[in-house]
Image 1: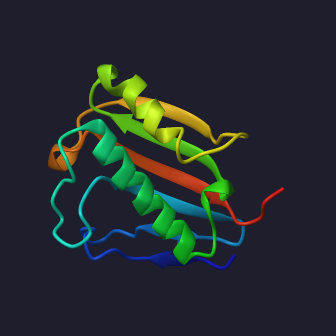
Image 2: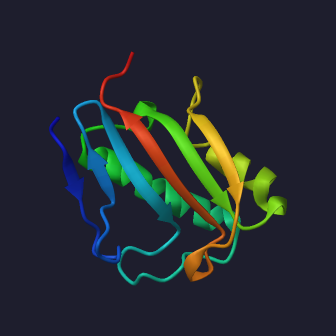
Length: 125
């Protein structure tokens, strides 16, 4: 197995933004943080979801992949009332067939409203 990990300067150590094996890219939880300042991007779910998905897209691109390679997503929301608005924004990033997804409600660090981790397959079928 050939494993590679990528580090983010915003991520506390020990932490990898992603780990790639021969067949999958595992992306650690991403949130709506500005990559230059580390500040939370916006106080609303739309801004934070867009920023989070852009972080995921960047990690995928750096590994030669795209959102079409994503097969599983875990979404962490701080409040059930955010679900519908989150879904509207999330749908802008994916096409059918959509990745398998789990949504979990919890507290998050840094005043984040959403955090997303993902698994992408290296080979599309």
